[in-house]
Image (cartoon, rainbow, N blue to C red; front, top):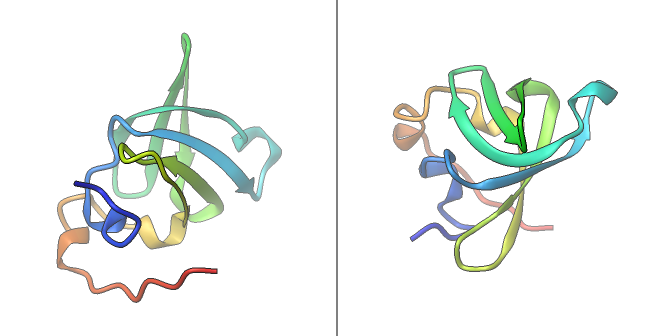
Amino acid sequence: MITPYNVLRHELVGLHAKVVDATHEGYKCQGCIFRETRNTIGVKHQEKTKMLPKDSITLELDLPGGCRVRVDGRLLLSRPEDRIKKKYRIRFM
């Protein structure tokens, strides 16, 4: 089960995401994550799709348990299968 403590070690495809902070105004969007590569995240909203760079966005993810988590995109910079090997220090604000 995905929790705020282990969200960085899980697959993000299928989660609802909202871009709450971005370096470029065109990156603001919300929808379902449908694709994830090493440097980008694909978000689909209705019929539109956007590929967003991970290093310049902050995502708000809706987890299946009903809670929301804000994640800095720089923490997601790697392939999904390689994030399992990384150690993270979780800090709540």
